Length: 236
Image (cartoon, rainbow, N blue to C red; front, side):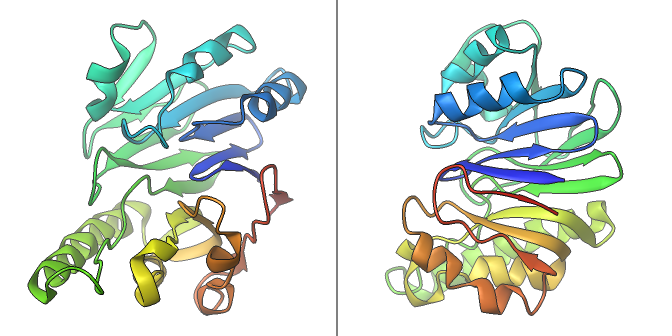
């Protein structure tokens, strides 16, 4: 499995038979170059978790001019992209059998849209979208923060059950705007779902803060994918 960071919450994940591109919103040249150089026999799938500008950019449909691709989007995006052939929209707990093998299933979010669990080539790949414990402990009333925590843990429990308790890759928010408990949701997810490779996201350009979670993450995950900038890549 090869993982390439695009920007913010965007990643390219390449497996033996497929290329998955999650939550692209910028760095078109990087994606175009990757699609041109990837093995021509591999299927290409774009995922978008919700309609926020930093997770969904309608430019993704233009990439099909570079390389044929399938598009799997949260149903929340339907109104943002109009009528397009070949686009699959998923509601929470809906699944889709991927052409060429494997499956994608949508799970909930604690913000907008969905999160995705993908099975392909013996791998389980999870992209959280905006699923996180958005507790805002230093700003929100305690009852509100606690309610968010309960909602997040209920969603994590569904993913744990569906995945059989483990994933090969989890791309998950580690957002320093949440204050001192900025990685609480990530830690709670790792406690629930055994994870081989953990990739922090939703960090904008704050790579230092995201990577500061490495020591804690490695108490649970086998590998922490440390990101230093656009195009960071690794094989696992």
